Image (cartoon, rainbow, N blue to C red):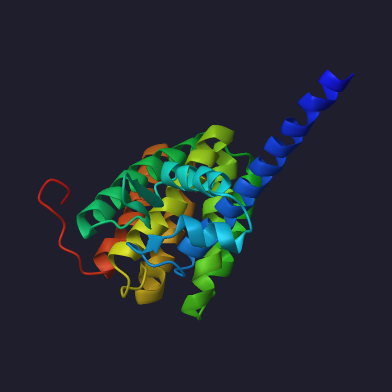
Length: 232
């Protein structure tokens, strides 16, 4: 019996450590995405340990997870810092994400149910009646979630969520003063999102793919960024 008891204590401690590491990971990730920790800024493991009243290990476990999510760089003999991406890297990321989302839209056009197509049409009606550009942000998110649901692929949905989260961080870290397309030009955004929904709901897979790519790369046009020759 004493043997069994001695095994339970470290197991409980490991469980507590994992929960604490998860809490630190979620808290720091939220702060990074909210801009509280600017790109390139140092993250002190000691300060975080003091804040969360814990040892170094749970903090480093959280840092390694954040590094795996491309939000933190761990530099040997130096420490941890918030990742920072160049404009070129952000442009590349937008193009890769656009290609991925083009395939998602094509899947939605093929697999979406009639009920899901109707939900997309209603989403488009609300969007086209929007006069406040700020309202386009949640509507764009709703449209994207409806298209993801219509694609009927849990793995694709998870990959898309990670790409969007990282893409938003990468874009804002490189171009912090440029508004996304739905703020810079609401009419352009409504037209592009409306075209994407129309292509998906009419089950035109090739056109849905093209419209999704055009919608996402429109952010580059709004930002007046010159594309490199290999991506133009």
